[in-house]
Image (cartoon, rainbow, N blue to C red; front, side):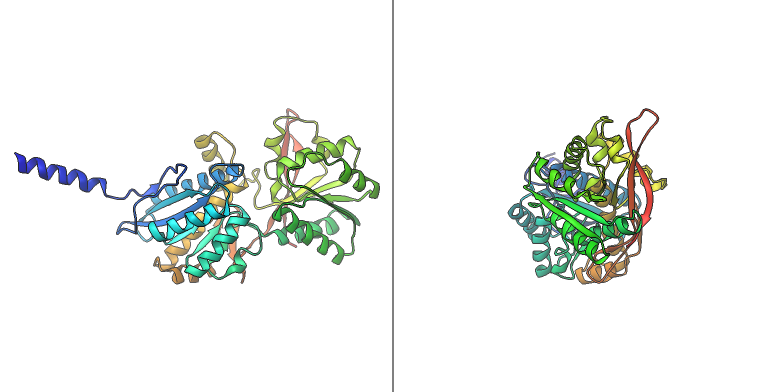
Length: 398
């Protein structure tokens, strides 16, 4: 009897050491998972700000990555193995991100990483990943410098300069703008990157940039900048900022009687939920246009299935960060499958020839590992109840 009991205990202990595949729920310290790759799992790491002021972006990406992993695993996994997704909360901090990266590489022995989410930690992690030969793909880090760190860094999103150039081209050729102005967040690299590229492209296209007005990060009063812009009476005003700032600025612009068209980039994705049913800006938004990675109103069945599943699972609408997170995971998994190996250099070689059809369209990569695909131009309209909704204008490529 004693021998049988001892053997039973050994069997139970052995079961506890078997690594779990699929998606793990991260806590404040991150989900450590099992160390090393096993014969039946492929370990892929994740980095995202899951707490703190940037958590809305990090959780959107992470939620979608988990959905992608579950879907991939349900369909046979990668190379016949389940993906074990191990994610750490980097709290929106560069040092935390690098520490988490080191855990993923040195302790968890992942073969590749989806991350980071925002540009500053993504760039720092990309530098380290290139030094280590670790494949990474950021879903949403838009700073051009991220992929310029070397051949191991890819991204699923548009870069800042591309969005600025594209919206200048659209303003000139589609809206007939001759005079344009810029109001941007001078403390945010995303905003300044788009603003600078827009200004340069606008001048090359023969438009006059009447104003380039910056404001301190976190500002809520834009009266001085809007007064200066109104005096110049531009045809269009670029707001390369995130949706929370967009709504604040447009409310103040309307109060001042500014009648210019407004332009934006993918940070505008989220404006409609930010309005929370307020119809007071419907007239202003009817003359606003922004470029994005996708359109929530697209009739693509795969996209609509994802949006529906995301809302059902998490109780909130999926945004651009979620859509990009989902695609980023699938792009990486597709490359590993085509590589036929988890060897880093073979994965990177496969990434070069990516031709992936996902939620954001068909993605290939240029020589600097940035995605090549058309942008979606979106404006705004009203539904039958008068509530503001997105209105797709069409795809556009500068």
